[in-house]
Length: 298
Image 1 (cartoon, rainbow, N blue to C red):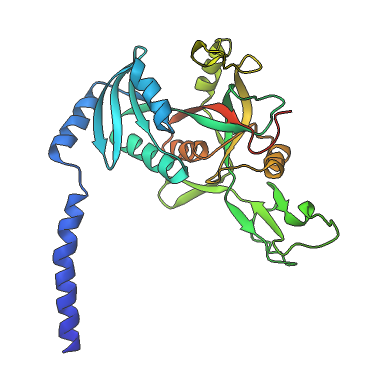
Image 2: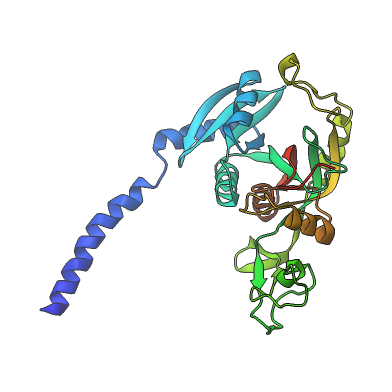
């Protein structure tokens, strides 16, 4: 009887599960729409982090919405180029999911990402500046060491954060011990992964970005009396870091800058760069500096 009951449960589950699986497929109408869009040629993918950035681009472009898996892709023209604009939302999971949907369904020749960031180097990057990094790292892949014990199977060469270095009493050990930053595993071929810590911006896009470094940015908010103390600038920088951490701590900010020479810190860029690396797509990121990650501006 127990065996027959189990078979009955499995049969009922199959009746429930299979219709649900079919609902995950895109409709025939949506598939035709995507096919028509791709027939026009390759587009630039423009991935923005939040609603404020999205609305800026929607105000100056001509787009038609296409909804896929909870994401709205705005397809049209922006400054004379075929463009697909999409908002990822915050965090690396949202960013990676959105970018993969973009690259899976549409013909995309390159991805440009725009969002906000904190400055890890306030002496060079100030609030209002726009940072264009050459390299990106995901700085939340850690090997967390056991107290008074180490294991040799993890990467110890990138950077490590030893918590006792930040004790009030420097001679006392800290039970949190140390964390060692680890590389990501990127799959460009099935089951053949490569360990990568630094993801690179596309050389051509990064070189092209030099042409906009002299663009004069607004110093005052909507021509009001609310103004930045210095003229903001667009600056190409060497490195940036991302993690699902809203960083509001001066000591950790300084650790990232000292150990990795990162200039900006955010929560999405490295995830988007990783997806583009896996799909062999050109990538460039632009990040507007809005804060100093908990530290002073000097």
